[in-house]
Image 1 (cartoon, rainbow, N blue to C red):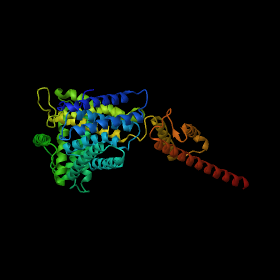
Image 2: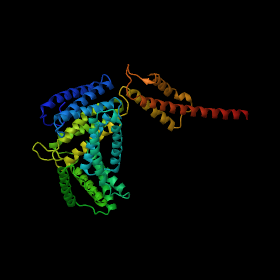
Image 3: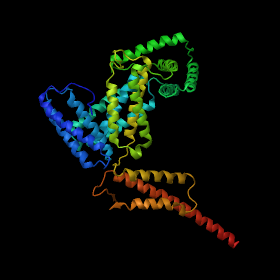
Length: 473
């Protein structure tokens, strides 16, 4: 696999042996994730983690006088940490410090993109805020267990994420409860329009419906309806504003007034609906290749969302992350350029950015959906999850009329319970991680089944009692 992103080679010859070792470790990690004939074992991952940390410490010794050095060693090291992080998720160590490296890196991308887009909902920020708090706790718990070099790196990245998050929160600071629903509606419409723009068949009627909703919001804000010339002028201003934002880079965000926040987003929605209606979902041919790649990644990630519980190994996400990173880092001053060095037009730029951000969001969702269970125990965990859902549905539907109806569930639960050896689920001679989560789920299933059985028996006793009274009378 090619390195991501492309950077200059190390200048210091002392770093070459470190690079060689890291390349070997990365190869081992990639082979580990590709081998689907057996599950990933904890001891293999922990050994490779230890070898990476050894190289980090060697690198720190070499760079005593040049801490800010960035070259190929750093990119390969990042690859290793990404793979180690995803491997920790695969073996069920979700709440360990190394496991959160990949998620924090993805959150950083998402926050940078939210800031760049300059529109997001309060729910977006609340969800990320909650996750960052959890990741901070993971890092703090690892103080006595993991190398300070890794913890320092994670803390620095968390600090950057929290700084960007605070800036994004400040942008919504003037939004009052009265107008917050209108703002959330506009965010939803803009995202829905972008989704319509990437469909294989452009949904004209759906876009028309969103345009009608925008007219209603215009009236509620007391804004006069924009004519074609005004939309054209705003489109040019919008494109220039985006260009300036990209060039100036990660500077402080302006804190708009409530009125300007709402009106600006309304105008963006109107402009975007007009642009995509004219384009009918057809992107500039010069950027069709990037579009197809991003659409392919997004489609694959969408499918993974439906099947990840049964078929996904967390390390599978590495290839998607690296492809997205390369595409993101290929931008020049925030935009893509064609073969002649010309920047993408507004429609192409915003379409590609939507697909890029959506794909990162899907990766993030898959990362946080990972269960704290080794893939060796995942089949059992999945069976118990399905059993629990079925039992809860039976309970919601009013229970069972006879304990006999619970026999299939009880037989399955007992067969899973009998797989334990001294209270543990073994795979060969190994005791995979995630025992507590699987045992807890098994106990919950037994509890629900017991409640259903007790309720059915009580109802049967009541019916028998009523019949006896009738016979006596």
